[in-house]
Length: 305
Ligand SMILES: [Zn+2]
Image (tube, rainbow, N blue to C red; front, side, top):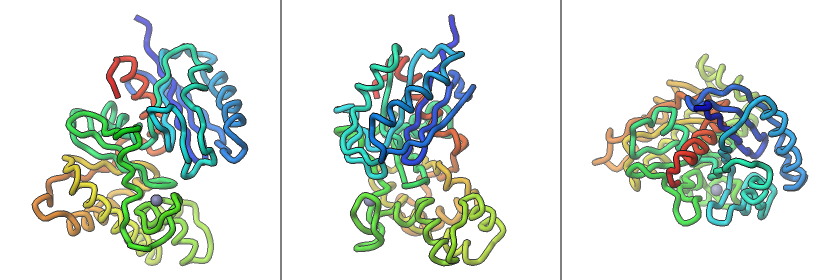
């Protein structure tokens, strides 16, 4: 039997990443381009078409898996993008025109959960939440072995849990939401306000690891808000595992401990110590591509998501 290869596509607010992924979750080749959503959906589609054509030149793919923010699985559209400038983009219809193999799409945060279940720390785990800390905070959950989708596939947007009434403005237009305090964007913004200049996130990680006082205080505050958010998620779903993924998880074990401390102290007392917290073992850099490919593989296996 011919080896099945999957094309994984992660449409992000800043970059769109693509990869040829094996059945074991290895990336054979990858590429990326700027999403530039402000230039319009048609402009994006042209770039996507040429990037896919280039990447698949030497491979035969059996399926395509796609993760996109604000994606509605019922309509097949990206709707009212929070960090994308498209009000209604007919993603599924357009992608099905491009490829002559099956295309499976889902909300990007849900994709990360599918990836963790297939290839990561959630293998064999039926109840878990993946929290992706990046430009925003994305969350995806499996409940009793099934992906939690809600009515349109967009359920579980825990980045928009309120952690401070009337607090900081969030990208979605409301105030006081978790991602305005605990995302990589929020951490970088706090650094800029405190130091008076911007730092790359890799530099923030280095300084945090080196116990740099001001940076430590900023990350600690973000971790505390995240811990409070996790306690809220736990109170509803009581997962056995929560996985921290995305660029923010590169802050490492020291950060994880800080999040854990806040999580335990805010948790519903009978639930304390009922949920394990782990850092993702899938690289933050390629996690979304691998998750998208996992969706493609599961789709081929006819598992209904
Ligand atoms: Zn929000």
